Structures are given as C-alpha cells and as structure tokens.
Length: 318
Image (tube, rainbow, N blue to C red; front, side, top):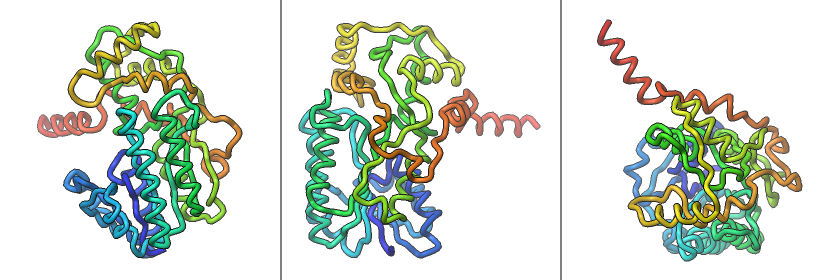
C-alpha cells in the first residue's frame, strides 16, 4: 500500500486510528490522506509523518472521486449520533452509496467501514436502520469490504463517560433515561487496532466483526462509575418512558448538540452487546481492554489539562 484515504479521520476514533496507522505503515512510506471541511481543527494530525490533511467536503461526489485517485484503500468513519431522518440518510446511506460508486470508478477495491452494534433493517431507531442501509449499500457494490460494528466507544476525550462525569459535577442528582439499557463498551485503541489489523490482512475482507469489550453494563452502572471515578458520584433517578421522552423533547430545543434525543431512546431498546453470531476482536488477535483498566485514569479529577495545571502550580511554588 502507498496511499490510504480516511473519511472522518479528524474525529474521536479517527485520531486514534491515524496514530495507529502511522505507527504501522509510516516506515513503509504509506501516505495517509485525511479530508476535512475544517482542517484547522485537526492540526495535531500534521505532526504525524506521512499524514496529509486536505480541505474537502466528502459529500461532494467530484471531490470524493479526486480523493480516491491512486488510493489502495479507504476507511469510512463518518457518522452522526443525533439528527433528523434526512440527516441520518445523508450521512450514513447516501455517503455510502457515493463512496461505493466512487471506489468502483477509481478502481479502489479495499474498503473498511465502521457501523454499529445492532444495525439492522428493522432496528428501532433511525440511527441503527440508517447504519444498516449504509452497510448494504457498500456490500451491494461487490467491494472487498470489512465492516466493524462497535458498541459504545470509550477513551480519553470520549463524549460518553466524560459527559456523564461532567453532568454529575454540576447536578446534585442524575435523572437518567434508559437506565437499564445494556452496553458492552470497547476501548477506542482496540477499535483502531482492529481496523489496522483488518487493513493488513486480506483474510478479513468481506467480513463483519463485532467490536465489544469484555463486560456488559447497564447505562445506570456506567453513569455511576463515571461519577465515582471523576469524584462526583450522584444518586441516579430513573425516568419512566414518558418522562424520558419529555426530557428528550426539551433537550432537542436547547442550543448545540442534544444530550439525549428521542431517537437515542429508541436505539437503547436494542442492547448494544455482542450477538455471538459474528466474529469479535479475538478473531483479529485482540484481547479486549477492560473499562476499569483505562477509564479511571482519564476521568480522575486531576487528569488531562487539570493535572498539568496542578503540576505547573507545584513547580511555581517550588
């Protein structure tokens, strides 16, 4: 391989993936092309050797065709968690169709695609149904396709455990919708390694993998752990279905990305856990990392920037 295109490479999973790809392929001179509409927000990627950050809208078919020129493989990480049915369709389905057509036109056979656990045509939410339709669009093109279906992904900088940790730092109690929803959290570094392994192994093509951690938790358990590890564990108030929907409706009206939407509530009716019917991380030679081995360190009150500030203060006092 000489050139790999990574769609969605500036996001949470993308950052971890680009670093893993650099570690694995930089010695071979493989160029990593990462398009973004706002490349100035991902300048940290430019410090990595062989990474080319390009300003581009990947939904533009002509631009997508140019990006795929001379590529040996493409990895699609583009996804949204919140949106209207039309936005889910555009992001998860229409883009997949455009990518399939562009790959066929450019002669790019190898495609890796990140979907989601529970993706199915008759799934309860727009999110999961659109994820399934995106997979189908790529499969129908006859490409050498590998699909990864992760459960909720955790890691430093995630928008899941960090969100619940921050909320518990503010509120005296934690009103929680979908408290009994089940998840099998997977570490972002394990997902990134799975993608790298798939890319390096032709045996993984035309296969679907479920990427899950070693343990299943309810949402209430995960929220409680996020509060405990961040030093702000609060009592959890379980919301009925009616109150949960009312809460989601109010949150939809607030500015910015909603914390919880009605479609999220529908998604949580489908357990985000391994089915056992498909190969998992073990099939790729990866032992899933336990949540408890990673999350306490980055959720700790004096972690990340806060820890650096504490060190700076100590140094000034010295």
